[in-house]
Image (cartoon, rainbow, N blue to C red; front, top):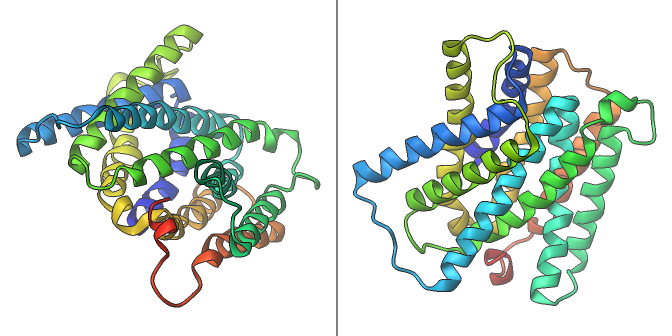
Amino acid sequence: MLTVGAMWGVHGPLLKLAYQAGLNFALVSVGEYALATLAFGLACRAGGVKWPREDRAFWLRMLLGGVVGSGVVLFLFWSYQLGPVPVGATLLFLYVPFTSILAALVHRRWPPAREIASVCLVTAGAVLATDFIGAAGPDSLRGAPQAVLAALCFAGFFMISAGLGNRSSPLFRSFFFSALSGLILLGVTLAAGWPLSASGAGLWKTLGWLAVLSAVGQFVPVFLMMNSAHRLGGGLGSILTSLELPVAVGLSAVVLGDPVRPSQLGGIGLILAGIALPHLKSGPVPASDRSA
């Protein structure tokens, strides 16, 4: 899961560079999923992975996961095209309070005090890091609504994928989610009339960008998450994948020249502390956390 977080952190700045090269978020999202689906399909065929025989509840969960997962990519890629990577990457971590809210609704229980404190820290950190009440400027926050929607979708996808346990192989689940999400993204793109072309980038350059982005953002991290989420549980998985945030912000500063303000660093610190807070205790992780 640490690798998942690191690769997603690298993916954001790479995505911004692809936009600068002439690709747009519709082309990247559909192209990434198309290549990832092809790679997962070939891997399933090579490994002899068969279509699992599961009950209706399993397939409903898989379908829901594909729908919600497509929302993560659609809204996050859209956010990165509209505004700076650090803002989108920071707001994505609002999935922590969203996960707590969804868990409270599903399990019909009030979150423990430690979890409430975690939600407050992450929310305060997001506000501080994105400088909503300061001088970030309207251009910096243009992609903020899309990033918040991506966070909501990610919270739902994390809970759905972790709840699947070890039913069917991780490789099949990766293929299924990738294929379904890709079809949904293609349908949304065609319905909205978004162009699936790269302005100023040739065919081979476009394919090269899509191959790199698909490997870093979809194929490798999605497979690793499908293989690890049910063993680690949602809580520990959240901590490990939070490596995405400092990697994305650091690379954005070095590669893209995005400014990093002291307030942003302080907000990132609050977010990381909020993610870790519910799990800073001795003994095994509670069963409720493992099934989140």
